Every structure is written in C-alpha cells, then in structure tokens.
Length: 210
Image 1: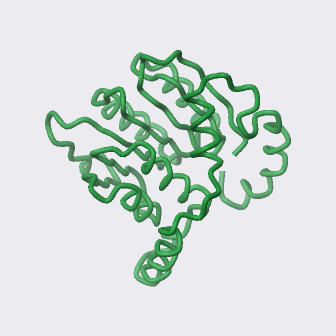
Image 2: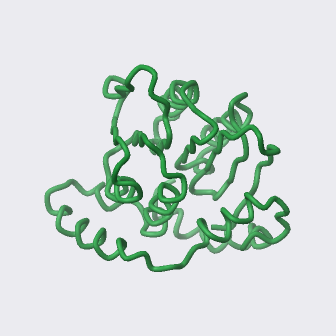
C-alpha cells in the first residue's frame, strides 16, 4: 500500500475503528495509560520544533524517502522512546527522518541502524530495548529481523512494526508476532503495531483508532 492509497482509505479506516478510540472500554491501567498519555498525547513537546527544523535542513542532503513518514508517526515514535527510556534503539529499514525522532526520545541510548541483515550488528549480551522495524515491502526480511531481535528482549523491551495491515502477508506476519512466546501486550494502530514484552501483565491484543 502506498501513501496515496492509505490517505484515501483513512476515513474508512477511522470509521471502522471508531469504537476503539481514546481508550474506551480498556480496563487495564497500563494499557489505558499508554493509550491516553502516549499514543493520544497532544502536548507539543519542545523538541518537535527543533526536529522539524533539523529534518528540513537535512532533507536536501537525502533522497526522497527522507520525508516518507507522516508527522503523526514520527512524533509517536518520539513519545514511545521517551516513555520506554531504552538503553538501546535498533532502527531497521530505509533510513528516514524517524531516525531523528528515535534518537531525540532518549539521547543517551545506543542507536543502531540497518537496512539489511549484513548491517544488523548487535553486540553480544546486549538486549534490544527498542526496535523500530519499517520495511513492509520485504516481509521475509521483517520476519527474520523480528526473530533475531525477539530473542534478545527483556521485560522492558518495546517493538514498533510498520505496515501491519498494509498487505495480506503483513497481516499474517503481525499475527505470528503477536503469538510469539515472548510477546506480551500488543497494540494494533493499523499503520503500526506495538509489542511489549512484559509477561507479568495479562496478555491482550488491543485495536486502537490512531
């Protein structure tokens, strides 16, 4: 699915997910807090302006994909990293402006980027604290990266998966990710899937109108 198709479908997607907005019907305190204070957070973080300016400055030096992600997605990635406070961030997929937002969410984190498996250098013994996996046009690659990184999670790890509803293949892969023995609570935002690995919390799979 390309961005134009997604934009055209968005009103229909919103209507289909209308009852899954703003945390309605969510009883888990953890899930409700994440939905209301992270996913739906509207506070204009001061870094947003700086990041927008930095993205514009770098745009002329990058290829067109530098601007492919929506502002909404980039800002959510910033908030998720800021919430999770990971020690390590792994960014797998075509390098894009989201890298700025991931690194800004926790500047002290060790950041690793990779566009293919040969670039996925993970230091022995170091867990994956936060993974942003965004290459849905190559589903086999997505699934292999998930397999590698899921084996190196802790109960504090958070994975964000792009394009979980874009194709039938990605829908099937997302289902398998949800069913992974290490996976805990998951959130389906249509464009993105979010997986937490804290198995002390009762596992549920939430659908969110994002």
